[in-house]
Image 1 (cartoon, helix red, strand yellow):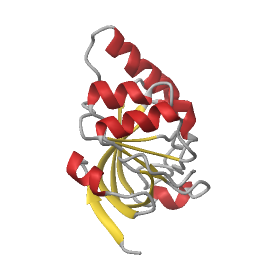
Image 2 (cartoon, one colour):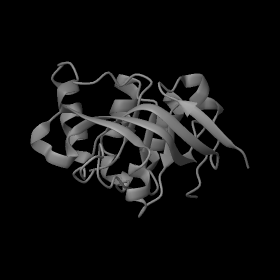
Image 3 (cartoon, one colour):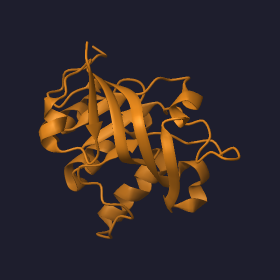
Image 4 (tube, rainbow, N blue to C red):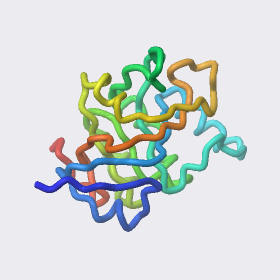
Length: 176
Protein backbone atom coordinates (compact mmCIF):
# COMPACT_ATOMS: atom_id res chain seq x y z
CA UNK A 1 0.00 0.00 0.00
CA UNK A 2 1.30 3.42 -0.96
CA UNK A 3 1.52 6.35 1.40
CA UNK A 4 -0.29 9.48 0.26
CA UNK A 5 1.27 12.86 1.02
CA UNK A 6 -1.22 15.65 1.60
CA UNK A 7 -0.89 19.26 2.66
CA UNK A 8 -3.43 21.49 4.37
CA UNK A 9 -5.74 23.15 3.65
CA UNK A 10 -7.61 19.92 2.92
CA UNK A 11 -9.85 20.52 -0.07
CA UNK A 12 -13.05 18.63 -0.71
CA UNK A 13 -11.51 17.08 -3.81
CA UNK A 14 -8.55 15.69 -1.88
CA UNK A 15 -10.72 14.55 1.04
CA UNK A 16 -13.15 12.73 -1.25
CA UNK A 17 -10.22 11.00 -2.97
CA UNK A 18 -9.05 9.36 0.26
CA UNK A 19 -10.30 5.89 1.13
CA UNK A 20 -10.60 4.10 4.47
CA UNK A 21 -7.30 2.32 5.09
CA UNK A 22 -5.15 4.79 3.14
CA UNK A 23 -1.89 5.68 4.85
CA UNK A 24 -1.25 9.42 4.86
CA UNK A 25 1.60 11.76 5.71
CA UNK A 26 0.01 15.12 6.56
CA UNK A 27 1.93 18.39 6.41
CA UNK A 28 0.88 22.01 6.92
CA UNK A 29 -1.22 23.80 9.52
CA UNK A 30 -3.68 21.92 11.74
CA UNK A 31 -5.61 23.03 14.81
CA UNK A 32 -6.01 21.37 18.18
CA UNK A 33 -9.20 21.08 20.15
CA UNK A 34 -10.79 18.74 22.64
CA UNK A 35 -14.31 18.59 24.06
CA UNK A 36 -14.22 21.83 26.06
CA UNK A 37 -12.90 23.83 23.10
CA UNK A 38 -15.48 22.19 20.83
CA UNK A 39 -18.24 23.09 23.28
CA UNK A 40 -17.14 26.73 23.22
CA UNK A 41 -16.93 26.81 19.42
CA UNK A 42 -20.49 25.50 19.11
CA UNK A 43 -21.67 28.01 21.74
CA UNK A 44 -20.15 30.83 19.68
CA UNK A 45 -21.97 29.53 16.60
CA UNK A 46 -25.23 29.38 18.59
CA UNK A 47 -24.71 33.00 19.67
CA UNK A 48 -23.93 34.13 16.11
CA UNK A 49 -20.44 35.22 17.12
CA UNK A 50 -17.26 34.74 15.07
CA UNK A 51 -15.01 31.80 15.80
CA UNK A 52 -11.37 32.40 16.81
CA UNK A 53 -10.25 30.25 13.85
CA UNK A 54 -11.49 29.78 10.29
CA UNK A 55 -12.33 26.08 10.00
CA UNK A 56 -13.23 25.84 6.30
CA UNK A 57 -11.10 23.09 4.73
CA UNK A 58 -9.12 22.74 7.96
CA UNK A 59 -8.17 19.76 10.12
CA UNK A 60 -8.65 19.53 13.90
CA UNK A 61 -6.45 17.22 15.97
CA UNK A 62 -8.11 15.96 19.15
CA UNK A 63 -5.15 16.36 21.52
CA UNK A 64 -4.20 17.93 24.83
CA UNK A 65 -0.45 18.29 24.42
CA UNK A 66 2.05 18.11 27.25
CA UNK A 67 4.23 21.14 28.01
CA UNK A 68 7.18 21.63 25.69
CA UNK A 69 10.58 20.47 26.93
CA UNK A 70 13.51 22.85 26.39
CA UNK A 71 14.29 23.32 22.72
CA UNK A 72 11.06 21.73 21.44
CA UNK A 73 7.81 23.41 20.30
CA UNK A 74 5.60 20.88 22.10
CA UNK A 75 5.67 17.95 24.49
CA UNK A 76 4.08 14.58 23.96
CA UNK A 77 1.01 14.98 21.74
CA UNK A 78 -0.95 11.73 21.51
CA UNK A 79 -4.54 11.56 20.24
CA UNK A 80 -7.59 11.82 22.47
CA UNK A 81 -10.50 9.39 22.17
CA UNK A 82 -12.71 10.99 19.56
CA UNK A 83 -16.19 10.12 20.79
CA UNK A 84 -15.82 12.94 23.33
CA UNK A 85 -16.17 15.39 20.42
CA UNK A 86 -19.07 13.59 18.73
CA UNK A 87 -21.74 15.87 20.22
CA UNK A 88 -20.08 18.85 18.52
CA UNK A 89 -18.42 17.54 15.35
CA UNK A 90 -21.51 17.47 13.09
CA UNK A 91 -22.15 21.16 13.75
CA UNK A 92 -18.55 22.13 12.96
CA UNK A 93 -18.58 20.03 9.80
CA UNK A 94 -21.87 21.45 8.54
CA UNK A 95 -21.71 25.07 9.70
CA UNK A 96 -18.00 25.73 9.30
CA UNK A 97 -16.78 23.46 6.52
CA UNK A 98 -14.38 21.54 8.74
CA UNK A 99 -12.81 18.97 6.42
CA UNK A 100 -10.78 16.63 8.62
CA UNK A 101 -10.46 15.35 12.16
CA UNK A 102 -7.65 13.40 13.81
CA UNK A 103 -8.09 11.21 16.87
CA UNK A 104 -8.44 7.62 17.96
CA UNK A 105 -11.39 5.27 18.14
CA UNK A 106 -14.66 4.96 16.25
CA UNK A 107 -17.07 7.82 15.57
CA UNK A 108 -20.83 7.72 16.11
CA UNK A 109 -23.34 7.45 13.27
CA UNK A 110 -24.35 11.15 13.38
CA UNK A 111 -20.71 12.16 12.86
CA UNK A 112 -20.21 9.69 10.01
CA UNK A 113 -23.43 10.90 8.34
CA UNK A 114 -22.30 14.53 8.64
CA UNK A 115 -18.94 13.56 7.15
CA UNK A 116 -20.74 11.97 4.19
CA UNK A 117 -22.88 15.05 3.62
CA UNK A 118 -19.90 17.40 3.89
CA UNK A 119 -17.16 15.36 2.20
CA UNK A 120 -14.97 15.16 5.30
CA UNK A 121 -12.56 12.52 6.57
CA UNK A 122 -11.50 11.17 9.94
CA UNK A 123 -7.88 10.19 10.41
CA UNK A 124 -6.61 7.86 13.12
CA UNK A 125 -3.35 8.67 14.86
CA UNK A 126 -1.51 5.99 16.79
CA UNK A 127 -2.45 5.96 20.45
CA UNK A 128 0.51 5.71 22.82
CA UNK A 129 2.85 7.35 20.31
CA UNK A 130 2.61 10.92 21.60
CA UNK A 131 6.38 11.43 21.84
CA UNK A 132 6.86 10.20 18.28
CA UNK A 133 4.01 12.36 16.97
CA UNK A 134 5.53 15.40 18.71
CA UNK A 135 8.59 15.04 16.48
CA UNK A 136 6.35 15.83 13.48
CA UNK A 137 5.20 19.11 15.07
CA UNK A 138 7.50 21.95 14.04
CA UNK A 139 5.63 24.90 15.58
CA UNK A 140 2.95 25.37 18.21
CA UNK A 141 1.10 28.62 18.91
CA UNK A 142 -1.72 29.25 21.41
CA UNK A 143 -4.71 30.72 19.55
CA UNK A 144 -7.82 30.66 21.76
CA UNK A 145 -9.24 29.74 25.16
CA UNK A 146 -5.97 29.88 27.16
CA UNK A 147 -7.88 29.15 30.37
CA UNK A 148 -8.36 25.59 29.09
CA UNK A 149 -4.62 24.89 29.38
CA UNK A 150 -3.68 21.93 27.20
CA UNK A 151 -7.30 21.80 25.92
CA UNK A 152 -7.00 25.30 24.43
CA UNK A 153 -6.92 25.75 20.67
CA UNK A 154 -3.39 25.69 19.29
CA UNK A 155 -2.13 26.21 15.76
CA UNK A 156 0.31 23.44 14.87
CA UNK A 157 2.63 23.29 11.91
CA UNK A 158 3.23 19.62 11.13
CA UNK A 159 5.49 17.77 8.74
CA UNK A 160 4.83 14.19 7.64
CA UNK A 161 2.38 13.43 10.46
CA UNK A 162 1.66 9.69 9.98
CA UNK A 163 -2.06 8.89 9.87
CA UNK A 164 -4.51 6.32 8.56
CA UNK A 165 -7.84 7.24 7.00
CA UNK A 166 -10.17 5.61 9.54
CA UNK A 167 -13.45 6.88 8.05
CA UNK A 168 -13.62 8.30 4.55
CA UNK A 169 -15.99 10.81 2.98
CA UNK A 170 -18.27 8.02 1.70
CA UNK A 171 -18.74 6.72 5.26
CA UNK A 172 -16.55 3.64 4.80
CA UNK A 173 -14.73 2.92 8.05
CA UNK A 174 -12.10 0.66 9.52
CA UNK A 175 -14.20 0.30 12.67
CA UNK A 176 -17.06 -1.83 11.33
